[in-house]
Length: 76
Ligand SMILES: [Zn+2]
Image 1 (tube, rainbow, N blue to C red):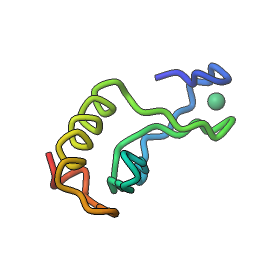
Image 2 (cartoon, rainbow, N blue to C red; image 1 turned 90 degrees about the vertical axis):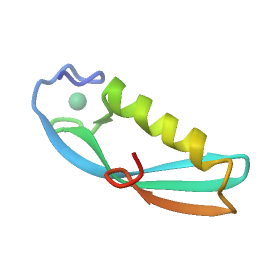
Image 3 (cartoon, rainbow, N blue to C red; image 1 turned 45 degrees about the vertical axis):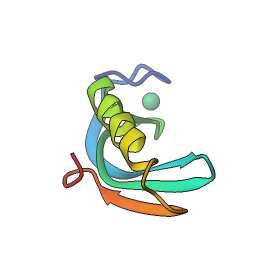
Image 4 (cartoon, protein in one colour; image 1 turned 60 degrees about the vertical axis):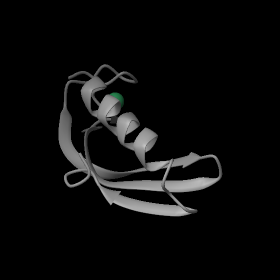
């Protein structure tokens, strides 16, 4: 995994809340795995994680009312 910003290879695996606004509803997915660049602080999500997050948001946005907080590890 290489940083897209500074090309550093010093990426640390972390988890972070993913925040999204869909149709005026706020969706927060907690504990989403991602990589933090040690050099510039950029946060990167892998393609497979983003796919899963988008699939979750797609499903959630049809049932959400205003604010929804889910856990990445539980809502799959
Ligand atoms: Zn970087």
